[in-house]
Length: 194
Image (cartoon, rainbow, N blue to C red):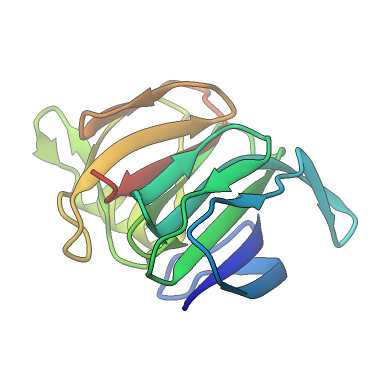
């Protein structure tokens, strides 16, 4: 009998440095008895500690179809099989610091964020070691000027899948990404699920 665990996560300003500071606002766990899809409700907005967090994505590992990643703020049907399923429903605060992009990496195979270094900041075609170390430690990148980024492949033994910027609808499958001058928001690298 498979178990389904759903974590609703309010992504906090943070961190990296070996710890992930996230608030698991609500967790539910349920034994699944059949092979039918399981419906997970997704709220467009979640309030936590007096702050509004907006839906960013839902990720599930262990489904009958493998990994699932959705950016739609609607009820999601999770295909049930024989394995335990882990679901993360992630919400982001809407305010970031001016000219700052928060970066992070999410492992779809585990349905959770990873603490591993995952990104290089490029100066021409070479790695800018000081900026790379800083962004992997702090999880933030200044956008006072445009920056070229490259995702590591693999991370934790899991291959790179896509980049996704929030807010916005853009995703792209190349390891290279660009942070535009004066860009604000979030830029996540997703791993696995291929």
